Length: 204
Image 1: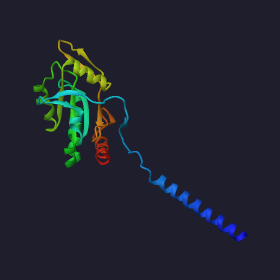
Image 2 (image 1 turned 60 degrees about the horizontal axis):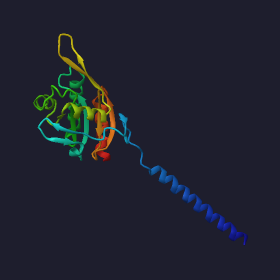
Image 3 (image 1 turned 180 degrees about the vertical axis):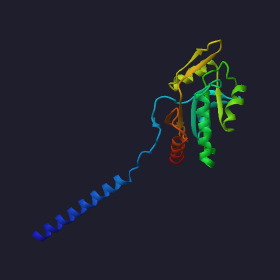
Image 4 (image 1 turned 120 degrees about the vertical axis):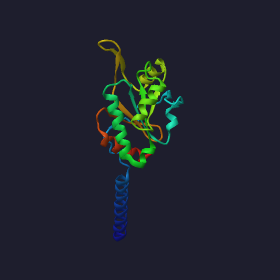
């Protein structure tokens, strides 16, 4: 009887060890969160979409670009520095991505609807990269969109006449299923953008 009891204890110990090993193995195989370099905003309650018109005159929503990684930047064509720098940086990103650039859509949403007509955007935005699209709308549509994305913008009078537009500078990134995933502050550099876009392309 004593030997039978020892045998049962041995079996139980073995089963316990097997269960622990299985649990540990399961933990090791648990999916790890992506190692993003940019700010992860997955699950954010803002930036859920837009309804604007592109520079070719086509009505656009975020759903139109499903299947691609989408980047969204708010700016304007008369911007002296931040906007052209951001668009030039995204053009460099597209070159670095090579064939994968076909799976990425870069969007500029104007914060200067008074001057940034479809014609103006059509001349300006694709000059950085042929696939880039400029989006515009009337003043109310732009205000609603900026509010949805928590973007600040405001006209500033210039000495001698005319005006500029102060605005938030940063890029939002969506995965291929249309979910807001990342925010890149201005000046993060092409390398970080390429790194995280590649992750989004692989994981969605």
